[in-house]
Length: 352
Ligand SMILES: [Fe+2]
Image (tube, protein in one colour):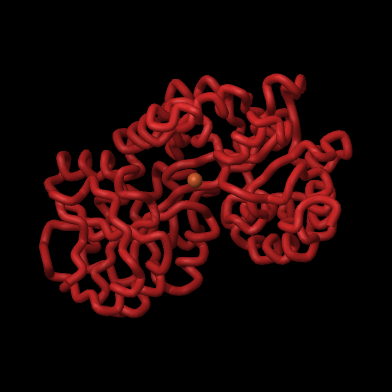
């Protein structure tokens, strides 16, 4: 039988294949003082926060981790679903969880008080826990500029000099959706065509691969999330990543006007939530000073709670001025953003 990761297996990287889901039979009454977490976030990233929660409250947590299919699983389980809390990254995925009906509203002040309105759903279906900014990785050697805007990425001065991952990746969809929210669809389409024309190569690889491409001289600027710079600079297992990260500087786009695009990792209360009270305690804890500090230190993300300091490494990038646009506005535009990516042939690369 498929089991939740228990205390002994917690630190193991555990991928649950979707095929197992249909046959899993976990009784919601398996344990009284436990919160069952369905997570798209890797267990080792969230375990320090969960350990701190258990130490403070005595409430155990169990994680099911998967890379996809958790919403389908919760829907299939229906009222028997043991899922209490859903943890995921990106506004697209949080909004999608609400759309398919696997979440329920939370209005508990203990949960909402620490999270500014632009980082949570107006109906209480999802809450941001951490922020990450989508910034420009610029070559230290070949880019003298210390400021940049997203709008400027379509300027011909960058022709043949930009690298990004797939335009359809949720991280880019979030950014493109924010451009639609700020400038309108028509403007955004012209802009995206301009960015595509400036690409050095066909979009490929993940965010770290973009830093590697800058290091290798394939392009001069790239798009990537802030925490990857910190993770590369501190990567002892693959020290070549330190070289990639050291070859770039972080430019916060639009620092001089509206601020840089941010996205979130977040949480939602599952629709069934058999351990609702304990789940709410966990949600409040994850938004508290103690957990927010751990998120900042361990994952190099920006705490969503105001006043909690970022890690020393993240502080070294300079000051983040977040675009105040509500994440729910970005969520509204994500489908149009995806259509624009196809319409301009973004993933076909330059000159196509
Ligand atoms: Fe990521």
